[in-house]
Length: 509
Ligand code: FAD
Ligand code: DLZ
Ligand code: SF4
Image (tube, rainbow, N blue to C red; front, side, top):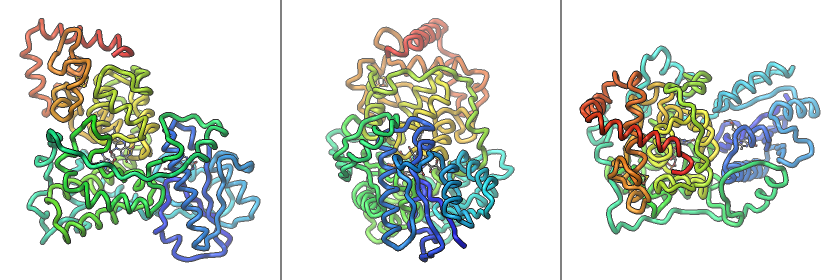
């Protein structure tokens, strides 16, 4: 039967069983469409990276002998919509069947279900064969759960997949080694240089300008640094395992002006567009460790938990809670993001660095996303829709299923506690403890009020005061409320006035 198969820009999985055999009846289609480049303003490196990876993937399939239709951004036949392009192809080429891989995004899932109802040929959908858990398994796991604890999910996944297990028990005798991690970067420690690729992407940059695609961020057209193929993604992974993993867990929460990625893997882009799979990442990490024992178990466990735990868990929450999740705004926050989120032009050194490197590299590591930009947005009362759009646009690895659960859930607590048991907020003391940002900041991390006091300090207490009705009963915040209650009223008043002054002058911070 003459069949058309759709491959989306984040479904570049050459290990998929679809490609096991060549079939003259089957044609694959990939398309660069404005509906995807424009649904949010993306970082230029994200669009270029996806298009480049899509094109090399299409070429690879052609070399394997598959039949491919590739609709590029400036192709005259391009209608810039998945549905319209597919309908046109079906009609023109007389396809008798349409097949697609389950998309990761709710919006595209609905779009393809709608499309299937509008074309009068049979449609079949297939698993993307990427995740540890299928959508059905996730549904079963999360069905009728009152709370969605990541730790229970993670342990179930460790057991089910026999990862880091010995005789039914976790290797090292503990499920979680978090307490051994979380150190600051030692003085005089020289951080390893990140492994970078160098691609000339001038033609893509020209294409985006020519087609009037609006983007944010910077790019060096003659030196694009991200992996765009499976081979490069595996090279980056090997580099991480051999060189960065020994310090991954210990320094995973550290931040510094000296490095934009420290010992992080930078494999999220490769993973999210499916050039590599989470299973092969974990298998490689664990087998290298078994063979070489080049680091302690807490580094390995810390890393496995991110991929087997957090990544799969966030996907579970997404499919259990969408589309309502996208509308949640627990604290009813409604302010706009300050304009310096788009240029890094702020006197707050931590935000200046985290935002500037995001614009430069389309990347910030987890703690910068959570405890600098996210922390500030939450304390400043920014509307979670704005926060989501910023995160979805700016990071090369941002796809809604993993972006929204991290942003709206973990970072903004806009879901009222589905992902996290308390809001991730901090004053300057945490930032000073984990980074070298405060040393050269215009503001003083140890001052709470006064002209140069760090804004995080007053905004932090202001947040507790503003949201007492929603947070006072939270067991994990009892201690903070007891400190706030004991503070003398003059000091409280000063803090609230200081916070209000900063919020009224947010553009000038
Ligand atoms: P490493 O620190 O080296 O971790 C290894 C891998 O673990 C990552 O590649 C990733 O696949 C996985 N991982 C780690 N933490 C998480 C997590 N919380 N959720 C899911 N996977 C995780 N990750 C995305 O992939 N896309 C996003 O759009 C995204 N948005 C985020 C927004 C906010 C506000 C926050 C706080 C986190 C977000 N994350 C997102 C999670 C995390 O920050 C990134 O996965 C990580 O920074 C990617 O860099 P890395 O590959 O160097 O990760
Ligand atoms: C993010 C993105 C962008 C910018 N452009 C395209 C595109 O032109 N064609 C495409 O197939 N996919 C693109 N993507 C990735 C999609 O947004 C992603 O595949 C869906 O959201 C499903 O997760
Ligand atoms: Fe950030 Fe405050 Fe430290 Fe400055 S003093 S870097 S604003 S935490």
